[in-house]
Length: 369
Ligand SMILES: [Mg+2]
Image (cartoon, rainbow, N blue to C red; front, top):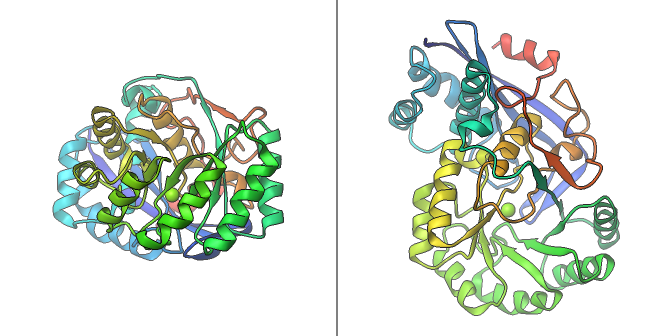
């Protein structure tokens, strides 16, 4: 058995409403879909998720270029189950580009699951849970809109609410206070600054935010500032979570050495499923708990995140697998993730591979590459 074809196509979906974090606002998601086919005619599908406003260094165009011109040539002819060898080939072909490589990794897991007729979570160690409680992540917008979202999703059964911060200390405080007041004391409330602050300006502001009983504070300072992350971990009572600082297992070892994170946001669309499992194992051994966040994945990426969350012990916080609710339209044939779940959970996906079906329109777009 060998890989005979690797295709990639752009997939753009508008957000229902513009989505904002500390680095800017986007109105359309510009992702890349991947299809890997073998000489037996089996295929697997993946998704690469470049968030357009500063989360990662990659873009839709860079991912298409890297997959077509660097990764495809080293994948053709390989056995799709030889993941470690494939990872080494991709690393030699081009260093970095984790999101492009994650799209390939997800497609390979989908392919292996389809060939073996088992769901991807079996390939990741099997299920440790059959349902994943969800947290809803609220982008930066007006206080009234943020409160409205928080109240709605708490009433829908979501276990946690995340408030994106980084709009400035005064505005952040207003947003967090208003959301905590609206959802009451019993719902978990977390914040994510997406690298917005210097550590010395973050500290006094975060001390004020701690009054609102936060579950954790995510990525308060730039990804490279492990010293700042470490100072905040030591100074704050609330756990500090690394996201942009934690793309690779090597990143996580550095975070642990510098005592620069209490928790990790682990995302298969950021690190690949294989990389995410390595990171989760390191986290478990080091005593760090994990969540599975969102890089605003469409349906394929969300399915990959859900399989990982179901198959990983160290994931112990509500997961933000909510991005398909934010889009106008869906790439999947069945609206599994684009309609609100009845009780704030997603159930394990039990079909072969990722267990989801891509809509015909996107299957034809992939055959045109
Ligand atoms: Mg984050």
